[in-house]
Image (cartoon, rainbow, N blue to C red):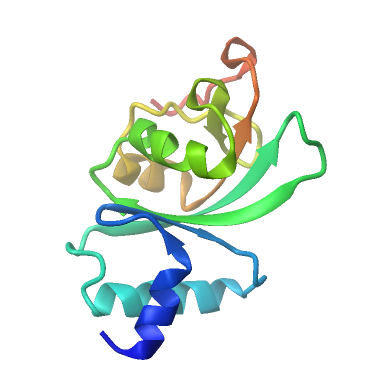
Length: 141
């Protein structure tokens, strides 16, 4: 792996099957996708079945905080395991966090990442500090 890939990889949190990138440099989406593709090409991600999700972070207890993150995971990973991986890195509890569509419907986390990608695309939000019994769940099961 070359120096450029080493520098790109240092920005991604995690190892193996899931990684997380905080967009603190405010890169364009094309730059992030190019970074992801170069890491896939250099076998940083061991399999070919990786997906990249662009997620807007919304803390309910800290209004106004809207950080952009990118999550790379295998298409067979459940979104529950993705949520369990992401939450410690965003200072949130998985029990009170939910992935939501941009039109504010909850995405059930027992689905695989591949199913979520096919149903809702790769852009979504993660809301933290919410009461899950107050979520309107998306009709796509």
